[in-house]
Image (cartoon, rainbow, N blue to C red; front, side):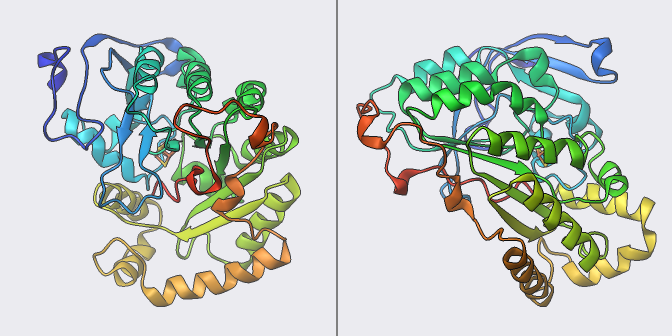
Length: 353
Ligand code: SF4
C-alpha cells in the first residue's frame, strides 16, 4: 500500500483533486470497540478540498476528516476513492479508515489565509463525518468552531445520530454563519436497510435525529436517496417513508433513484446478485450498463414523489438549508471577505450515490 512511501510532502498524482496531498502515516491501530476495523491515523497537509470544476456538485469546497466509511453502504460512490490508496473499493472501504488527526489545526491555518473567500463548505461528501469513529476522534467540534470563527457557511450531510452531540455547538455557530443540516434516510424497511447499508444506524435512530435537529431550531432536509428499483420504490414503502419523515419534523425531502457509478456499481450488483438474483437482469435492462436508471423510470418516480411531497407538505428543497441564523445578518460580525448572502449559502450535497 502507498502508506509505505508516505512522507509529509508526498503527493498522490492519481488522487482526486483535493484529496491528492496526503501527509504521513502516524500509526495504524485497531481497537476492540471497532471489531475488524483498522484506523490509519495520518497527519494531513490540507483540510479544504476543491471540488473539480467539471463536477455537477453545487458546492466548490469540501472537508472530509476521514476516508473510508463504517456505514458500509453498498451503493456508495465514494468507494472508488479508496483505490487511489491501493486499497479496494469493497471491504477495505468499509474497514480501513483513514483519519486526518490534525485536521482542525490545518483547517484553521487555511481559513486564516487572505485568499480564503469564505465560500460554502460541504461536509459528508466522501465519508460520513458522524460515523461512529467520530465518537473516538472527536474532530467535528473543532471543525465547526473553526468554520464559524472564520465566517465560513457550511452544510453537513449525515446518517449519524452522533450529530446530536454537537447540536448545541451548531446552534451557537449559527449565530455567526449559515448552516445547513441534512439527514440521509431512504428506508422505512429496517430489514432491507440493514442488508443494503449494514453499518448505518436504524431508520428509527435517524428519525430521532431528524426530530432532534428540528427541535434545535434547524430546518432538516432529508436525502431520501437512493431509491432502489423494485425494492424501495413501491407505493406502500414510499408512503410509509414520507409519513415518517413528516412526523419527525423534516422540512423537505430530496429523492432520487439509485446511481450505479463505477466502483459502486460492481459492489451493489454483487450484493444484488447474492440477495435478489432475480432482479439482476431487470437492473441490467434499466441501467443499460450506465450510471442512471432510464429516463422513463426517473420520470415515473418523480411523478409519484411529487404527489407524496404535496400530501405530506415536504416540498422543501436545498434552499431550505438556509437555516437557523439566530442573529439577523445585520447583527452578525462581518467577515473580512464580506457577509454571506443567500446566494453563497451552502447547498446540501445532492447525493453521495
Ligand atoms: S453513502 Fe455516505 S454513509 Fe454510506 S458509506 Fe458512503 S459516505 Fe458512508
